[in-house]
Image (cartoon, rainbow, N blue to C red; front, side):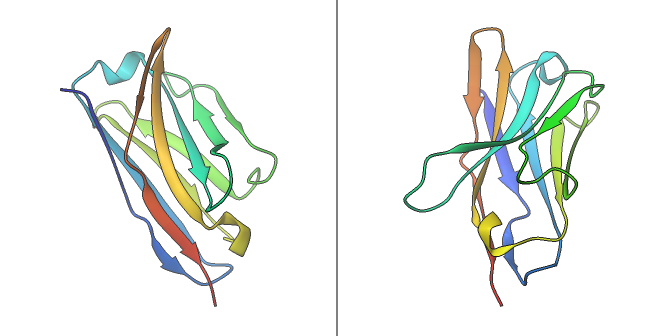
Length: 116
């Protein structure tokens, strides 16, 4: 059974940091490209960051470049999103996504709230 379980969300003040985790099981994690998306209320889900199967290549949305870092540990079947200098506009539900050719899996998401 494929599972992607996000964790690490919460309530922070502007300028603070959070580290999201996404634990994967039920598939060969090390062969999948992993990415993070987010969706704010009333908005479409948007791309945040992506990392290749080996971790050697990453890419980011312009809105988070320089503040967020995606990484993965294939030995732990986990992908991370380090989020620094959080802004109110980063507030959303964050989802991880696994992709291998035509296979796509999504997690249930973790809420990030940025508010003073």
